[in-house]
Every structure is written in structure tokens, then in C-alpha cells.
Length: 106
Image 1: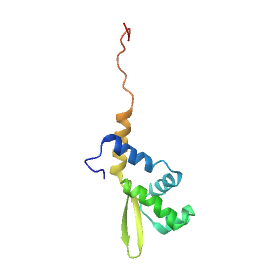
Image 2 (image 1 turned 60 degrees about the horizontal axis):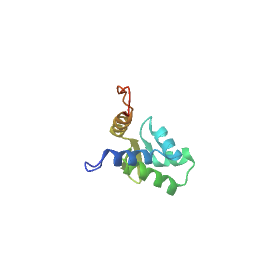
Image 3 (image 1 turned 30 degrees about the horizontal axis):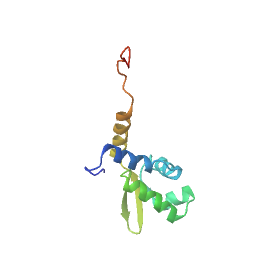
């Protein structure tokens, strides 16, 4: 998960960068229904293993996915805590409705 020394802005950049790629969003969509073996992801996305590994590394480094080794295979799943964190970060960005002064400049 996020390192405590990350500022809110730094963590937002890290997470939103990880979400800023179509392939990574496709991976997330595939993992929404549970854990998947890397071989399944490779086949489903019709992606080269090296390309998929790069995208999985970005998602893993951001804490969005986690992996589990099973022999020579690696299985990936989404980390629900990352999505709770993203929801909190986005909520903090929502505009606040403040009462406006009649005049801003006098």
C-alpha cells in the first residue's frame, strides 16, 4: 500500500498514472471477478508476456494488484484497499460549495 511519507498529491499521481493506460484498465476489468493466472491474462488480452509484465508491474507498484506465486505460475488479484484509497482521494478532490460573498473585490 502507500508509503506513509507519500503526500496525498504524490499518491494520487501514482494511482492515477497506473490507471491512465487502456491495457491496465483492461487488466483491472479482468481481475474484477477474482484472481487470474498470468497465462489467462496473456491469452485473454492477446498480449506479449513482456508487455503484460510491464503493465502488471505498474499496477503492482501502485498497490492496485497483488500477486501470488504457485509453482512457476503467478496469479494476480485486485487489492480492495487500493480502491478504497482511490475513492477517498477522489472524494477529497470534489468541489466544496461555499457561500459566496456578494462582492469579491471592493
